Amino acid sequence: MTDEQALIGPVLLLDDLTPAVAELALLVLARGDAVPPPAVLDGASVAFDRVATFDRVSVWRAPLRVALPRRFSYRWNGVDYPVALDLSGDCRLAYVSCNGEEHGDLDRDADERNVMWKRLAAEHDAAPFALLLHGGDQIYADEVKDGHALTRDWPVSVPEKPDPAALDGFRAHLRAGFGARYAALYAMPGFATLAARVPSLMQWDDHDICDGWGSLAASITQSAVGQTLYEVAHAATLAFQHGATPKTMPARFGDAAGRHLGWQVKAPGFRILAPDLRGERQLDRVMGPAGWAFTREAALPAEPGHSFLMSSAPLLGPRLSLIERAMRWLPGVQKYEDDLRDQWQSYAHRAAWIEMLDLVRAMTDDPAARVTALSGEIHLATRAEMRFESGKVLHQLVASAITHRPPPRAWARALGALAALGEDPIPRAPIRIHPLPGQRQRYQAERNALVLTRTGDAWSAVWLLEQSGTTPPLAL
Ligand SMILES: [Fe+2]
Image 1 (tube, rainbow, N blue to C red):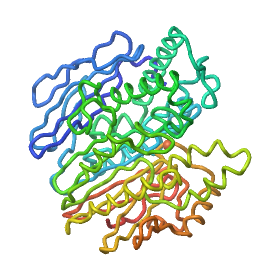
Image 2 (cartoon, rainbow, N blue to C red):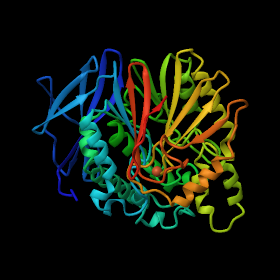
Image 3 (cartoon, rainbow, N blue to C red):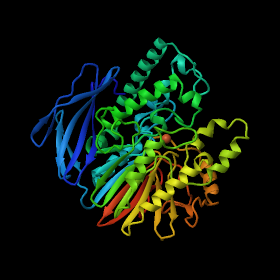
Image 4 (cartoon, rainbow, N blue to C red):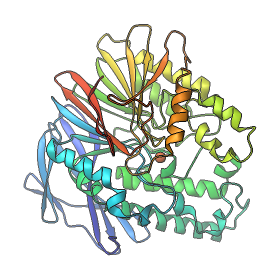
């Protein structure tokens, strides 16, 4: 792989957007003592500052300020990178999720692993994307915490009172692991091409920390070991996914210290709202008070135009609570319990789910408002609709995964059968799960990505499916 590459990147991030200015961050990862040369924008040199160091890998950031979001190019390390950041008219956005696998992700054949990244990069070459949205599991960090004595029995038990030296050693182990993993991922073919040319916006999910974070027993997540894992994963997410520290949070975030990572970006005629469904999660809650307060405040009052709600776990889904309850009584399947607890449809989150759906309905109160939910997480492609009493339809588009291989087709069929039951958590607003355009099954078990296109005022979506190709467009 690219272990000896001293400089990795660049990765372009959107910090914030106002009608007059796009604040961008150019990220470069440097191994050892390497220092990235400056970037050049509009003839001016822009130096990099070091954001953080994770063992051998440092994160460097150069601010790029672009007046009136537009097409422009910047130069770095001898290469010109064109950027199509014009969001005022017709535009295309890409959405991906689940960039990895739990075991051996970095040992996979790079061509096979990144086939959908490369396809998305080819799409960008044909007609450029203005933004690249990452809906969760940007990395699979599960193996980072492995290989240390303190996590030998994770997630069943952890040492209750590890001595401070052991905890320091664990922290160093984690920092080295996160640094190495991000460096490897950010150098992957396809990803690197897109990340340098399309401004990214990211919202984390469990694997950016560890499998099931927040849906595991409190004795694990609240332990000194669990809290150390969270502390390092949080710092790594801020540095590598947002080019930030708790002292330098970009303006789009709701919490200036990054205690939850909810954010919102507004562009002409549309906005993207991404609540943090992971950072404050516990067994009996999806978000904490701060996350909820931000989400409510950001969502309302309803606005004309299109709202894209990034909900890392699908907002609309089948009655998974049935399976979840059954599982409690079936031997040997409890290890999937945290996966079900992660869902809005868990019986433990039903009140929160209804509250969120009511909030989304209120977001459509403006006559010219439309809402589309974007989700990942399930390693399948699917879509759903919720028809409100007003006649408006909440579309939910699920695109997962960009590199994680799909679960068995039997699981997709079982979910499809369960989906036939329907689910009406709020009265007179039925949820229906539908096949993708041109497909017969409700759940498509192949790797995929989503492309959103605005033509005039109209938005549409297509899925890029690994085997089945590009779907016909779905009008939103
Ligand atoms: Fe995932």
